[in-house]
Length: 344
Image (cartoon, rainbow, N blue to C red; front, side):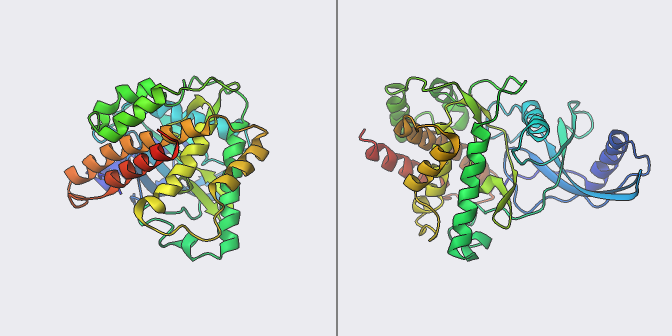
């Protein structure tokens, strides 16, 4: 669910046709209707279109995803759109992390109103956030062994990301405590007592670095994975990527699943491994001893509560959801629970 951008599909298709024809070296390239996928987030405006052209081996066809940089409805203060695309390109070229093919980037906002990139579409199924995959959808309907296998494969691809060698791209550190604290005004929650308490706990407990920083996905969750059966076909959404302690990703992965079950009053799906089993599986796959997990659990809970304040304001402000939409309320309640559990 997102704030939709008013865009003329015919003008968009004409502009994209010329750009893609030049990019692919295919003067006869044609595009089908430009559509908006049914589920899209605030990270960027996403469009889907089918391209046909004549290639060296005859007629060619490919489904494309056009991601347009956020402008008016940014979820985060520093979306780093260029870095997202180039990270995805490097991952596809140099690693075994499954990502959508990176096919082109346009920094000039003149064509579509903002910079954009083009990715190859990856077919498959994505566990939904709304309604939660714990309540309905393909994962909910799958047999318990299939659910467990999909979860394990998601954790394994997370560990694979954490084993990626350094890449020639300056991503900077992932979300830090002081950066998050400075951004609370942007997210609209600077006076929220639960978030302020969480920031205080984090400031008092910043752990020593336990090893060299690694690549972080930043938004590690089932809802950012395309599954082909139980296999991971592609890892999506690198907007929050950076470098840092890998436990940050692990804690986020666990927290987002907890939000979509306990956090919204839904029963967690049978067959999904619990947190302890997940941490142990990740540790085996990375060869790392998990460090300062309680700190990272609190950090994940504070981050998520801050982000949901912004999402809720955008959704209610544009009357896409009722004024009493419970997203942020649920997130702050789970944050309070997390603070109690770690003994603060």
